[in-house]
Length: 102
Image (cartoon, rainbow, N blue to C red; front, side):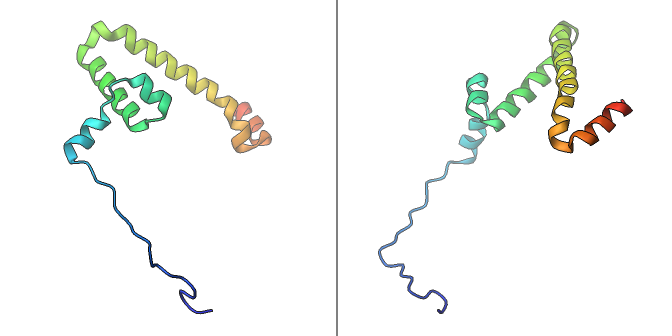
């Protein structure tokens, strides 16, 4: 068997997809519905929404303290609950060792 033995490219055609411009690509990053983007797994749109929300919280300042405290509390809950994921990642013995260190 040699290189390309028995392969024929006759009758095959390739037509590349039409690309969008830079402006359309940047506009596609901004979600029209962040919850729909989250449900569909559009992570770039979710990250863009989170960045805009975070920047808005910082810009508003003291009036947004309740929202900031909510997200900080939620982050703490997620950090604490992530300890339950460690047995599957590190193994049970390593998990017990880690729990004794905390």
